[in-house]
Amino acid sequence: MKKQNSKPNILVVNDDGITAPGIKNLIDVMMEIGNVVVVAPDGPQSGMGHAITIGKPLRFDRVDLYPGVEMYKCSGTPVDCVKLAVNKIFKGQKPDLCVSGINHGLNNSINVIYSGTMSAAVEGAIEGIPSIGFSLDDFSQQADFSHCKKFIKTISMQVLEHGLPPATLLNVNFPNGDDLRGIKICRQANAKWAEEFDERKDPYERPYYWLTGVFQNNDKGEDTDVWALEHGYVSVVPVQFDLTAHHAIPVLNSWTFDVPGLPSATTEEIRRTAAPDGPSLG
Image (cartoon, rainbow, N blue to C red):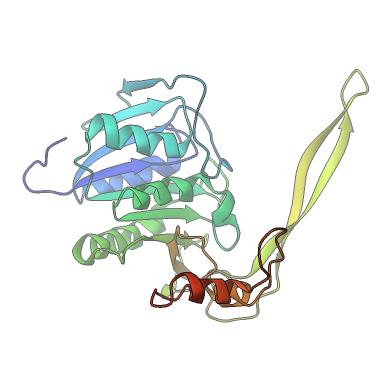
């Protein structure tokens, strides 16, 4: 896809499916900013994480849902949508911005790990595209996204103007309701789901299970996304896809690995012997 009238090219994706109300609201905002291409799953793909489709073909078809918008539905996952868009529509030229959402439901804290919305944005960042995931604290198909739009436009314009640090994307979450106090740059809260599986029986008396759970936040910090959302702020968390626990490398370097047939040594000693002038692993 080539630029038109020097406007930025913007890829819009989601995980709720191409007909979800959230993506229509995101398209509305992006059409005010640039040239829009939409590639979205042909049905709901929530909770897919960074899954990709292997072992079976992907379907990828043009659809006409909204006037003036180039749109495609995909049989695969949200990440598949980004991969196909980059390879088959933009043909390696890459869009100027990738936005994902607006998701029906929050993707704050640990939810970022499971989220198809955020995984699509992560894939955009892996491709070197400035990327943002947007989510609203409302699962309803009748959710009102109108109060999100001015914030989405402002944040997107800032990303287009300034870019993002390498290997970084933004996770943006909105509280429900239109009485928003502003934007807060936050860290991801240290919280998790206390999960349970509700066991039931089918007509043949075979057990099946529904995943349920309660969100538990044990993080009392006032600089987290959970705190910001609870206090009426739009939370913006910079996310990286490098999962290395860099702070743990010095700890592991102090361990002794007794491998049969090899002399005992800590990894730090091995490193110094093998490459005395090399860079520190820590």
